[in-house]
Image (tube, rainbow over all chains, first blue to last red; front, side):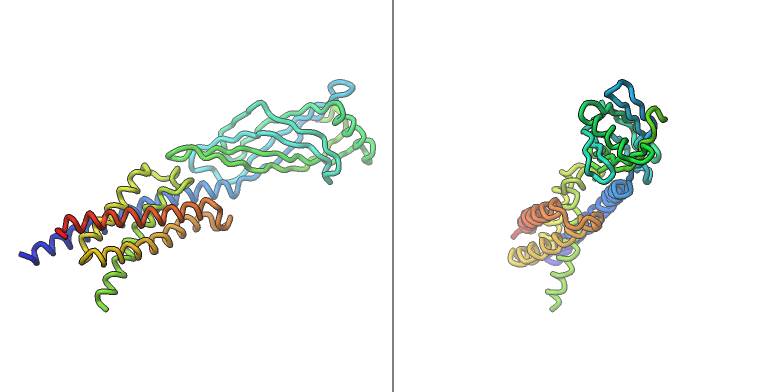
Length: 178
Length: 121
């Protein structure tokens, strides 16, 4: 009788332990796979900044338009991308040309997706930009774009938001150049 | 000797299961889990319950609880560290391992106690 009770306990204990081990390892494997794909996307996401328009719109204002292009692997979970704000500086960082922000443009994250951005440089920043252009040979000024993008991943049990730096150098040509 | 080997096998198997379950509760990881976090707590108690049926006496149960907590904490750390290997050991991993280790220890111990009670001790 005693050995029967013991074997019943042993059987229940072993079954519970084996089932729990199997289930927890399978669940961990699935979670690791999802999480690794998220980290992979985050690790390889890169941005390329391209100036598409530069125009003097009034005597003391200039309009700049860029496309921020995201590249990297296709995300395995639905994700969206938003460029929050950016700073403009001369390429060597010595002249600061202001802080700009978008009006909350959010796009679905995919390889090659582009976010249109624009900034109006005016006042003191415009004067600094003009001075930089005057000092540069041929009026071509290399500038640095320092921004931050928010990537939101819709994970199975909630949203994960990450801020990624967006840095690019571009050259301003002649006024009115596209 | 045979008793020690048996205890180690149970501790390693239970620890891996407990660590894997506790990893499902860790901050960012939790969001990528296909199941709700409550299931991880249930699994931890079930692991303890299973071991409660297998140990002989409460003292052996307590010892097994410590082995499982140690092995579980190592498994939990490796589960969180491996996908984040390129960014080192962020604060959330240390926080999750600390809380995960305590959760594993107390929940498996509760399971072991319940298992011993069911076993008629």
